[in-house]
Image (cartoon, rainbow, N blue to C red; front, side, top):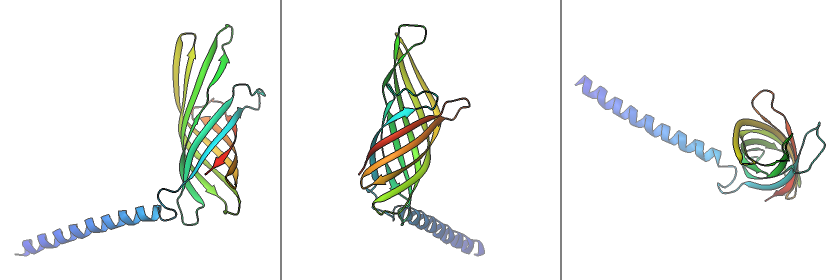
Length: 186
């Protein structure tokens, strides 16, 4: 009889735990999306130029980026989002007359802090992602992929944005890319 009562109590406790876990999960999801409607986000489209302090040439160093940021708090100051970057350029191969076509395609998960919304909105953040480069050169093709990171900062002015990114592959000895973007936020 005592063991039967213990089984009933355990079953009741297990049901309460499952219900509590369900409610906690539901509350967490509601809090994450309570700052803004689930479909709202700051989408952006930018174009920019890649430069290196040791190399002043800008020929063929253009990049396009698009993505979206989603507010993670009620004050709409902390954001999480994604960014995809792509460019196509041609590069001469040293000691030959051949030219390679290079197509970098990068993807990042970003976290940003944005200032108050008073027409001018400064922001800063960073992200982790995947750097991918496809190269076609005289019949030989290659595809390189690396894990990378970037730091970014900029300003949004009524739907217009200016941004500077410092981007690098995670491996030691890799070169830092500096990218200046101009674009739109909608």
